[in-house]
Length: 170
Ligand code: HEC
Ligand code: HEC
Image (cartoon, rainbow, N blue to C red; front, side, top):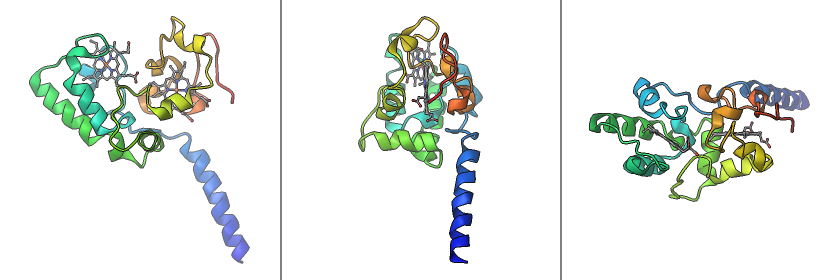
């Protein structure tokens, strides 16, 4: 009887794992102003991909945003700062990727971007460098170039298609 219970728990956890892999890795974006203002130059990165202090640092430096001026109107700045703060990675620890990104940073460490967080660097270390720098991708910041469902918050390996390489088989 005891063994049967253990077996049931084991099978349940296997099922839960395969089921969750088809679900979102980070909470999807649900703010129209954010999509409009922060999705015009690149896809709108989910707030759950960075902790609060990293978003704050990025927001106060929008005039020097990766070599471009991404300044926004003061009222939009307030709304979007609050949106990023309320939906940042620490507020979304039930999502696997948000949890891993936060855990990979030292307490209080401010990340300058998502792609340079230790978790992201580690996850992408096996990809050939020329596949990342090729013109169709340009850099790791371009999540959508390889993760076909990044805009839905789904980064599972099944949804990866690297330009001029194809699907990723581990
Ligand atoms: C005027 C264009 C522009 C606007 C508007 C803009 N960005 Fe960016 N952003 C860039 C550029 C350029 C980069 C560097 C990567 C690239 O070339 O796409 C970047 C990079 C980023 C990255 C880092 C990606 C990585 O490598 O991990 C984040 C996060 C980001 N932007 C968030 C935002 C947020 C939040 C807003 C809205 C407040 C915003 N961006 C508005 C141009 C813009
Ligand atoms: C050049 C293509 C490419 C780009 C650009 C890219 N990724 Fe990835 N990503 C991959 C590949 C390939 C893997 C699987 C790596 C492995 O398992 O060894 C991966 C893995 C991941 C994983 C882990 C998924 C899992 O099931 O373990 C996450 C999360 C992720 N990427 C998020 C991002 C985000 C966010 C961005 C943008 C800031 C991004 N990636 C940019 C190709 C890319």
